[in-house]
Length: 283
Ligand code: SF4
Image (spheres, helix red, strand yellow):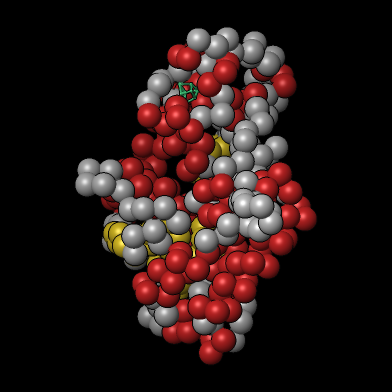
């Protein structure tokens, strides 16, 4: 990174959420880029997302639960080739067969909607939108639908359970982030944001308006400023919470008696807060 360059130059919803949860976690993932143990939950999420993406490659009449399950197994085999260590997290039992457990999640998906009645506008869409001359939003949207009247719906699949009461706004932040990116890229404000939770067959929908999206932009820019201040001061505080139970960095976290490694020199920081050395795993 250039000595005078601002950091971060871009932000995804995942990295924004990291900083909000724990600035030290953000540092480990975005600056140190420490490797992390793949988790079975995250790997299963990636396989299900891939199956739901490729399901729409098929002619509408062939988009059945059986085909979706076949695609999930094909996605798992691809993962075994490309990331055998991650795929191994789903291997259990004496015969080493994968415990993919795709069927109940895919059954939930078919309970929530009928893919034979849909033709998505885009799937696994990479978005990147400049919101200031030196700062952009980026990420991947699971699905974008366009209604016959032109209205846009942004859809995200979650293989976990829906958030409990009071936590829906946090879950919807990611969707507002994507809606803002879409709006800045295309000039069209999405009409509907839809989160589909496959573990408990629930859907959260929200209709944003332009004032919502402007408020989201202000919030993201304030977060960018907070990250920049932490970076300039080289202080990324550990903020323990119940999420520490799933954190790969406890051994080097002061909240757990560990010692973080020295912060790399700023000239060696990545130019963005992406985590390119790590696969982006979908849950
Ligand atoms: S263990 Fe907890 S406090 Fe430490 S870096 Fe991870 S999330 Fe943050």
